[in-house]
Length: 187
Length: 202
Image (tube, rainbow over all chains, first blue to last red):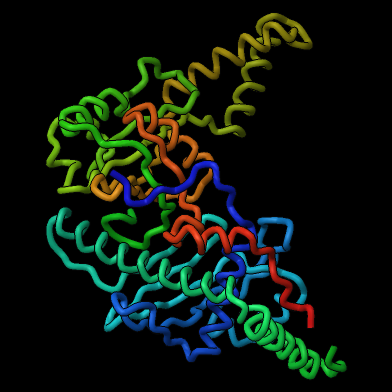
């Protein structure tokens, strides 16, 4: 019956979702926020929206929450990564064709929160539900496509050779810029 | 709120097990058997749970499948009621009752046994007139593809859902594991063997 066979006994990888979210943030800047997911899904645009929450490595409690306009471009946000914090929540906008989806990702189940779907037909409850479920499934396919894309890059040789050094430089750039802002020497 | 309108905040589950032949009749019976029922006693403090319809939490009869089954989507709510006494009011009223007892019995202090009895009677009295705190959480089950959305991330509510769903339908809910979304055993295995990256190791 099920085309999804989630493994009850398979442990959640604690680093998977925080790394995926960090990569999404990094790749949105590296790739200009546009990605071809697959022939079937086509191209999507995405960017970090107005909320990023961090936690300490060994605790699920939020330690720093950045909200407002473009928190992803603030030196403080990447400095939090440089300081050893990991992403707890990331709010994204994903656009496919003319449809925009707003979603906050939250680990370790990759739960979704505060999802704003792009449109809503008005009518009987039945029609509304079909419409919203179709849009929800579209969002799920996009997130699955992005997770696959991350996983392929994460497990390839390119991760250690180019992606990880580039992400470290990206994080380090924020640290340097933060140090300049405060008049300190760059670490 | 969520599945039919407004913002969605959901956890996704896979439903493990087969939907039986003739599931419509069986699931009407199952939902009705585990539907929310008002407690016989108005002084019950424990949480009471059961299924109700999405359209109105007072509708707990699932006999008409057109009210909850839309093609391959089953839509219903988990309802949980709990009576909670207002703690400060309860404490203040109890103190008054204890003072009254002391006056009536011409005693300076009320013995523990009598105080406990006054407390139990007051609790029953207040529970009778106290309305429950009512929580409803939407469930949307795609029967054809075997997945389900639950409109809450709360650990307690999700535990409650899994237990009641298993008792109702005999099917197990397994929460989404991002690894399972990859749909490629080799890739899943490769990801499973990765460790956490350190961004700051320049």
